[in-house]
Amino acid sequence: MPEPTPRRGRRPKHARVARTERLTPHMIRVVLEVDPEDTLEAGEYTDHYVKLVFAPPGVVYPQPLDLEEVRASLPREQWPRTRTYTVRTWDPDAREMAVDFVHHGDEGLAGPWAAAARPGDGIWFMGPGGGYAPDPAAGWHLLAGDESALPAIAAAVERLPAGAPAKVLVEVAGPEEEQKLETSADAEVVWLHRGDRPIGASLVEAVAALEFPEGDVHAFVHGEAGFVKELRRHLRLDRAVPRERMSVSGYWRRGADEDGWQASKRDWNAAVEQEQERSG
Image 1 (cartoon, rainbow, N blue to C red):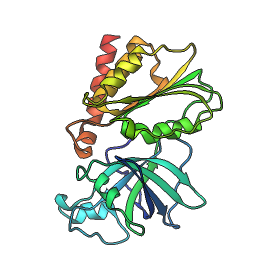
Image 2: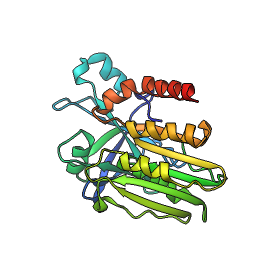
Image 3: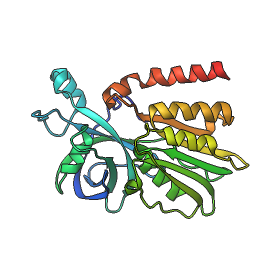
């Protein structure tokens, strides 16, 4: 799962925008061409992620970027901010990495950057990391999440073996935010339209009402931390899904930017685990 900060000693990689595409009214794909001198190992996992590096307005760092030197030589307010995004696809021959961004106008940091990105624009990033890919030996697969998890869910659905049973539930704002998911699996894809309801409410209800097939389930549940907590409790306690058969984590938390969420995420996860141990 995404780490609070890039690991020490790892040099940031650099890429330039090759092209952009508006997938839906609120989803932008930015295809980045990774510099030839940077080695990128991706493909093992379907939830590969990178940490994009953004300088504060008006701050220019010496090139090539050295994050340790920046932190050692500049005041904290001039340190870069990072934002974590899933690698939607990686083409090693073309050296092109596609990253999908949820965009809500001027809100946030990375979304506005993606909306304004033009071919040739440069960006630094750390990674990729990752830890999940659908187990081809699983009896069936459960994939559930909101818009932030959609790129990883789409990548996983594409990776599923031909004919593999899968239940895929994705909550988005409305029908205009749906995307076509390509798969050779026996996947039942359900789009849940949030409308004016709280984020995750429809998703929690749908998973709770789901008739689980027989057999070993491999689950991937990601998105806003509040509903992820509810679904993790449901899967562990009500459905008795073993911890090792779940990839469950909050990508973001309502009311907090990524800086605040990552700073508290480890403690939050530990508290959730303790609560579930007591309940179980």
